[in-house]
Image (cartoon, rainbow, N blue to C red):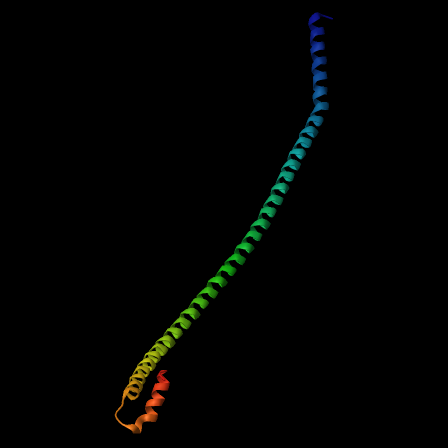
Length: 148
């Protein structure tokens, strides 16, 4: 055999070996690719599950915060309503007391004026010395005035 023939046989043999390796390795590579793809999909699924759990947790926290906010709004609304009611009641009571005070103030002035007039009358009676028929009146007037 010639050297060229030997080279061709060697080349053919090498090509045959490479082809055999390819045929053997091709399914292994495909399986490796499929396993890598499955691992990648599994990681993505775990990441999405973790993200979903985080979203659910955050949703739960937000729901609690909204419920607390609603309770606070209800409480503040009740307090404002109560304060407005108390203020309205206080204003009504103030107006009633003001009216009552004005009435009793007028009544007090009237009584003081009457008292002054009666005191003047008693003083005139107590100080009069004209006739004897009013002696008992004068004595009673002096006693009423505290003069004895």
